[in-house]
Image 1 (cartoon, protein in one colour):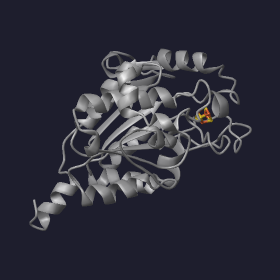
Image 2 (tube, protein in one colour):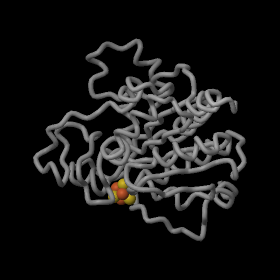
Image 3 (cartoon, protein in one colour):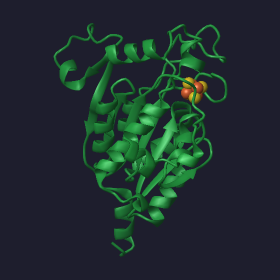
Length: 268
Ligand code: SF4
């Protein structure tokens, strides 16, 4: 681990800004381990992020990095992938970043099936700006913008991605970091637009307001409510209520956009 830290973190940028108990560090560590296992050289890897607590990860990671604007990480990443298709791009976004202001970029990246690896750290809230609800905040949960509990229904991000044309979708959580690492690796090895939803605790802006306990309680609940796809296939719908499917949710194949583009102009 010490070696991974030296190799893949910009140690001069530490300490990080994340609150004690935040899941962002766990997800970032799983991402680093997964990238190491892909065998890519650091110079071939690009980390693109938007704005928000989780997007600060790009500043700490010792790869080529782009810390872009709120909601636009996928747009920047698409441009880079089209210009340099040989690069391996991981796009870190928060739930609000990806599914609210960035929602349009998200569905069109999925529709194109461009070879980007989206890593969405879903803590169900806008943490950095003070706890506003996002499109992934579960109905009834409180936020500064929903003091009586949000009335909106949350997106199922992976179903949204699948419906828009993404070819790989997986869900893991910060309470099961080894499984998360494995899922990120599988997403990275998939050709086309892959979506990895990483559930992650925000004990400060979300947990405290909703009386979910501290980081330990939130992680325990995350682990207890996760059900693998294999196990879920043998369960009744009533048994799955309140549970969260984890693992590879879908995986299929379709033409990849950057390859198709270069083929279409005779430069494949
Ligand atoms: S506000 Fe929440 S998401 Fe942001 S650093 Fe703190 S615990 Fe993490």
